Image 1 (cartoon, rainbow, N blue to C red):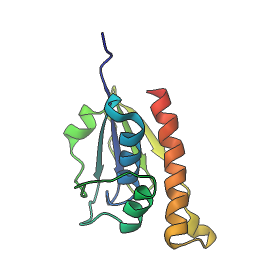
Image 2: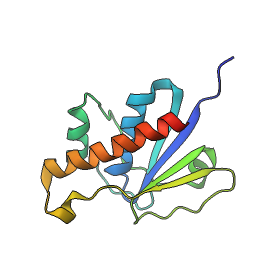
Image 3: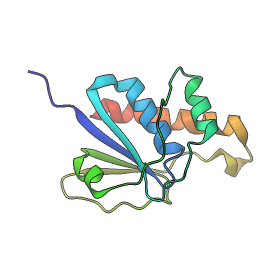
Length: 135
């Protein structure tokens, strides 16, 4: 008998960068073992090109992903809701595990561009690996 797949919802404000990055990394690391969804509390119109590029460096393709608005149903359907950053706010639902990840922000140290995005990616990847191991 196989155990039911865990479901993880990654949320950030715009759903163009960090939550998409976390979702892509989890899909890559966990494969079919985890159902992965990402959404934004105030979704933008496009994915962050540098986020997409840093995942491509690891051989991860986000395919036709695009920013999506967060819905109550998404939250209810998730076993774990991970909120990336301090900007996004999500109302907690009883029975659903919530985590907030305050990710590294290299721009606060004067690091910009692709170097910044790789550091953000690597921070999120380490957290995704830890979460996958705890599911």
